[in-house]
View (cartoon, rainbow, N blue to C red):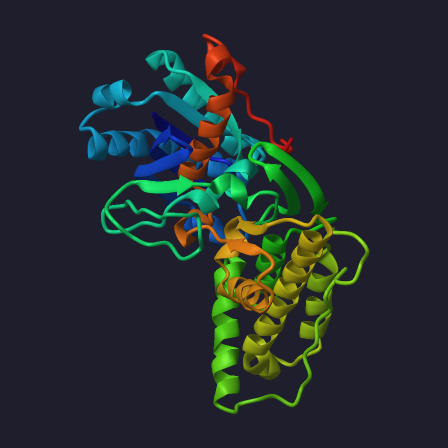
Length: 387
């Protein structure tokens, strides 16, 4: 079957076509086309996403991207209609003005095409994105098992035996969410820990603002931290000791808190002169990144041991951070008790391909009793939770 995914939960407008089939316990994934339009330049002057500006851009971008997707895949929207079996749209969580644009567009399309549609939890898309193949020259790949190091080829991406991944602990970490989720199997999720205030991605953004860097914070903090590492490798060090806290690192639960880390950064930064700030900015960025990633890795491992899982899965925009990936790979190389599954970099941020993938598993359970006018059942819900 071919699924058309639509994603507008925040500041990316995305449409994707995913072809999926299942035979003899094997799952065949063929990502036909993915288009993502970012709004970073629009929101950068404000240091964060402005909901109504985001909604306005989605309204403008959706028909343009839709026509492009149709033209570049099957030649026209009429031909696209004949190919699509199911529509899938993010219904939450997210910014309600942004969500409504995608939901209304998708509902209208499902009604006009007389096609079934599913509303998908954005977080579930991130949870399952590790199953997607990385982009290759022809946008297809194949593997024998879902492992981080995939063997590229010219056949559709094959996933079999993926149920052996479970049970698993997933670290879902982005600008709006930081959660630890226990996955007994696909579609059975239990949130076992989450942030009590700021999400990790939000801490990166606010930290970057404190340090006088750009938006979004994750990439610019990582770039500054890399400068510091190069300086240290060249023997360039500072006499000023920079030490930020690791909040809730040793707490007896799986929750997170990053607001105190942001405050500690602010107070330490304010004590410096302008000259010291220019000199020490890379060192502060490095320490902030170390503090955030130390907590994320430690809490995830703690939960993995407690729940005696087979695998650790990462999902969400912050998992594009190379330092976070390096720490998980290093720790698990020394202790190979857990398998580690990472999403391809192109699927770490918000995208419609992961929404289409999540829809497939829901369709498997619901197809025989799917409501005729399914578009009437899809709604936008800003605070939608995993269940």
